[in-house]
Structure formats: structure tokens, C-alpha cells
Image (tube, rainbow, N blue to C red; front, side, top):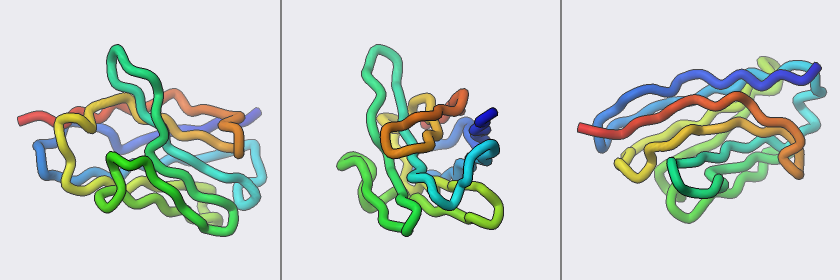
Length: 114
């Protein structure tokens, strides 16, 4: 049974930072492309960042230069470091596994507000 468990969300002021974590089980983690997506109320889910099994990364345009995705294969965990947060970053953030986002976590809420 595949499980993706996100953590690290919360309330942060504009300009602040958060680090999200996603612990995976039930997959051969090191072979999977891992990703982060987000969805704000009334909008479609959008790509935040993705990292391949080989460590190549790509980012959504709105977060490029502010967010960093990384992975620790020894811990079966993918991270999303979010800096210079803006109110527009407020959303539920989801962890995904697979090139076609085959598996999804339950999501973690990130709220950027003063």
C-alpha cells in the first residue's frame, strides 16, 4: 500500500519561510519522480516543483527562484523549501509520486498572511 504523508504546513507571515516534508512508503522511492502540487480555493491544481530519480528538477514559474525541491533517498523523503512566501502561495500542498502523478498525499495547508 502506497502512502505519502506530508507535514510542515502552517501559518506564516509574508516574506517568511517554511519547509514541507513528504515521507513515502510502499514504493521503491529512489526510482520515482516526486513532485509537489498545490491548489488554492477556486483554482485548479498546479505544479509547484518536481524532482526526478536522477535529481533533475523543474519548477512552476510562480515559485522559481524562491522554492527548492530536494530528496533524501535514504529517508524516502522529499522536501520543499519555501522562501520569500507571498499571500498568493496560500494553498493546500500535495506530494505526488510517479511521472504521471500516480500517487497523491492527503495535502497540507500553507497559509501566508499577516
